[in-house]
Every structure is written in structure tokens, then in C-alpha cells.
Length: 426
Image (tube, rainbow, N blue to C red; front, side, top):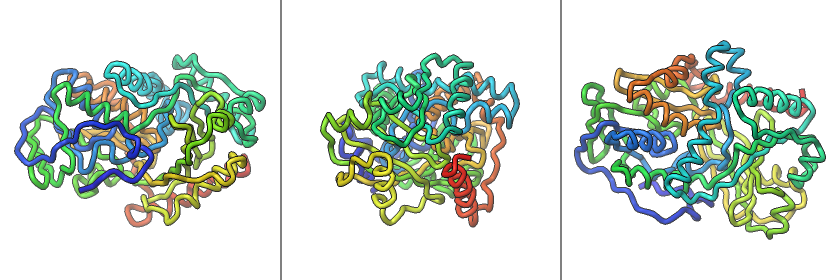
């Protein structure tokens, strides 16, 4: 049995139903492997469209990145529209650009529609550490405004000092269409909505074998699902041997988070005046926000290959004190690692492995919003409207440099180069 990792989110999750272990043969329209955001969003859209849906989860709902992430609703993809246009052309950029704010809208709609209690707060800041990053944010603002975001505000040094109690930043960009949530409670609320609509979710029921055909047969340790369609949505926690066509072109990476003891209301507001979430603009970025009970949640760094570091607090606490030296002596109550799935292009990987079997994965650190968009796109695809899904599926899925043996060290070398550029503002 795999319980939740020891985290702030697990300790403050909403009480709810337990999901059974699959111990029988189940007939369904769509079988989904993975009960994270990709699987849950897909299950919810498909259930709303009248499909019988069965979700298989190897551990617990939201066990992976969906229940461990920083809780930030950040628009766009891990590569923004300007990079997409330079790599793939204006037409592809136009199609993908038209969707960059849709994931956040979907989350807000789900929260309202199903009454999900997940501490949603509006607004996020991209914080610039040097003039080059600030110029980049001005370009980002112009690009996002082209696609309809009218909730963006540039911040100069005085403005950002009024928002964040740190002297680390020269300016920033406030996106009021961003925000932050309790990510595990969002996942649990979406799972409850799936059940309410007649869907089925099985925990501790990892897929161990897939037999493609009509129907597709997915086997677990104790049961079996027979389905017209299959969606593989395990991301960084997918069994790497389940289908190597899906798992061979990406790499799990770890990100670390710590949460402080509760802070006084006065101290909390001095740190982040308007309770926005914050991320800096470095290649290996840091991100932070306040929780509903006024703790500082702070994350950063990447461990390539998803190894768990020996001392998470020792990695993150110096970052906190560099940003907020006034917190010297603060106690850390929680610390954990969560894995996300990195692709070579840093773009999501959507595709088809058989005529009735699909996969969606590899959000490269931007999964909260994009995974919710993914659920809508696969629902459109199965219902016969393939255009938007295919816009992603047509992107090349490049293998990671170095294969399975050398991909982690080679990627880390590349990241170190960009981290050095960040350090010197070049």
C-alpha cells in the first residue's frame, strides 16, 4: 500500500471517501491510468459528455505531482509562445497560443461548479532578479496581451517592494489571471465530482499490463478493465515498463518544497502583501506563497532523474533566508520531494500509441493548468473533434539526450550552464 507522502497538503486535506481496490473485471468506455490532474480532468470532461469512465491509480488520488506541487496557477507552457513560434512556426504558435489561459479558466470553473474547497486565491507575480529578466517580462506581457490577457501589470522596483518584503527584485509582472490553490484538495474535489457523475476510481490498483485491441484490456494485480479507449496519464509516476513508447522520451525530475511554522498575520502580510503567489525568472526558478494558515511554502531546485536529496531543508532554507533574511530562525514544519516529468523540448507530449489509445504527459513544471486543458482536449478528441489535440500531437517528441544512462547528468550539465547565466544576468 502506498500512502500519501508526509506533506503539509496530506495533513490538511479535506476528509472524503476512500476509493476501493479493483478486484474484479470491469467494462467501461474509457480506462484512464493515473488519478492526477491529467487523469481526473479527462475523467471529468468525459463523464460530463456521457462516457463511462474508469480511473486506475497505483497509489492514492493526487499521490504524485498533482498533490505535491507548489499550488501555483501559472499560465502558458514551460516554453512560451515566442519560443513556440521560433521553433514551430507562426501557425502552430497561433493555435497553441489561443489555449494558454484556458487551463486556469477550467480550474476556476471546476471550483465554482462543484463547490471545491481548495483555498483558491487570485493573482501571481513573476519576479525579476535583474534588468534582463525584467525586459523579458515586458516582452511576455506584450505576447500574452496578443492572446487576450488584459489582467497583466508591470511592476517597477518600487511597486514590487510594495508587494514582496524582499530587496531581491528589480521589478516584476503581476498576472491577476494566475493564482494559487491547495493542490491535493483540488484533486480530491475533482475526484468526488467524477464519482458524482457515475465514474469509477480505484486506488492501490496500478496497471501492470496492457493488451491492445478492441477492447483494450488493462490488468492490475487483482482485476481487469476492458475498455473501448485508453488514456495513459501517469506522467512521472508511470510504470516505465508499461509501454516504452510512452516512457522513453521523457525524464522524471524532483523538486523540493518546505513549509514553515505558522507566521503571524503581520509577518505574513509583510512578506507578501496581497497574498499573491510568486516565482522568480531564473532557469532553475524558486517559487513561494502563503498557505491558508499563514505558513510560507517555498520550493525550488531540480534533481534530475528524480533522486530524493538527503536533506531537503538544507537545500531550501538558504533560499528562503536569501529572499527573506527577516525569517532567520524560522522553524520548518514540513519538507518533501515531488517528481514532475521533463521533456527535451520542454513542451507537453500528447499522442496516440494505438488507434484507440492515447497519452498525455511531460508538462515540464507547468502541469497544474496545462493538465486541466489536456483533459478537455482528450475529451474533444474522443468525441470526434481532433483539431486541438492534434496541434500538440504534431509537435516532435525528441528523445532525451544520452538515453536512459546519461540523460540525467547531461541535462544537469545544461541546466548548470543556464544557472550560471542567470547568476550573472546574461
